[in-house]
Image 1 (spheres, rainbow, N blue to C red):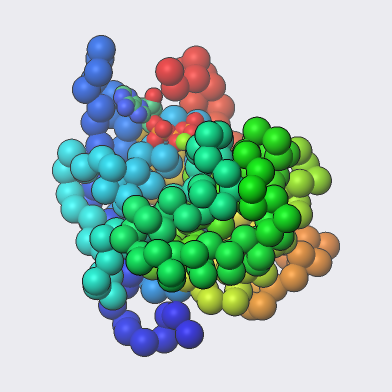
Image 2: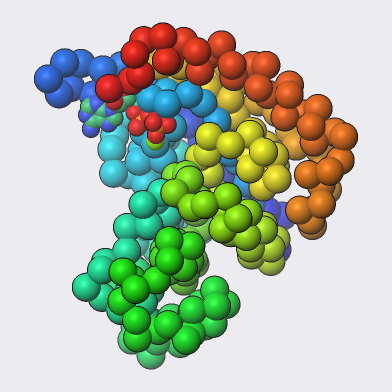
Length: 266
Ligand SMILES: Nc1ncnc2c1ncn2[C@@H]1O[C@H](COP(=O)(O)OP(=O)(O)OP(=O)(O)O)[C@@H](O)[C@H]1O
Ligand SMILES: [Mg+2]
């Protein structure tokens, strides 16, 4: 199982700050320190514009920190240890579902026979086999997000980065996808960094919840989620669930108001 082999943390974010220099300079993150263990599911919560996506982009090596460092302890031998799932699915509309999933594997340099085998395995696992030859625009948002998750997981990333992956879905689909992800993750427990605006989603899925301040983002508090694994969605009805939700909201509320008070973050 993941998480037992080594004691070195999977991710170490040390004193990381980030400024963007566009028309004006934006201090997105102030000093962030965060250590994530191998096999841990960490949720990032924070008001709009506090730098959550910025953290994921730096973990994916798409952006560099302006200050500080990010250390990822990989098992080695991979082009990239991370895979990302975005809010807007980011699937290619001109490729079929099957081609979309295989594309991730091609980018990761997986040889063809294995890429085909893994593509079909993941299509099956995500309930997409019947849609293999379809194009994404013919599918619902929930199904498109399944494609995006299949594409990411088929590469067997050491670290899965998810940026509000269910935010664009309607409430019922969101719930179904949360429950599916919970189950999928509990099968192999890879390291996940998951950004969400939903406290409920964070408690349902996460081992640990990191609460960030309004911009410039920094870490205000961390909460360990006390529910045992494997977890079932029924924990939503546990009184401790509501209690934790309230506790986190009390912390987040002022920051969300502060972010709105600034007229949003744009
Ligand atoms: N490429 C960029 N150039 C300039 N500013 C940027 C860039 N990317 C992000 N920012 C700014 O940096 C800040 C943090 O952005 P980021 O997208 O990380 O926030 P976030 O916490 O993910 O917000 P949201 O919850 O709205 O997704 C914001 O003020 C944003 O406008
Ligand atoms: Mg974001």
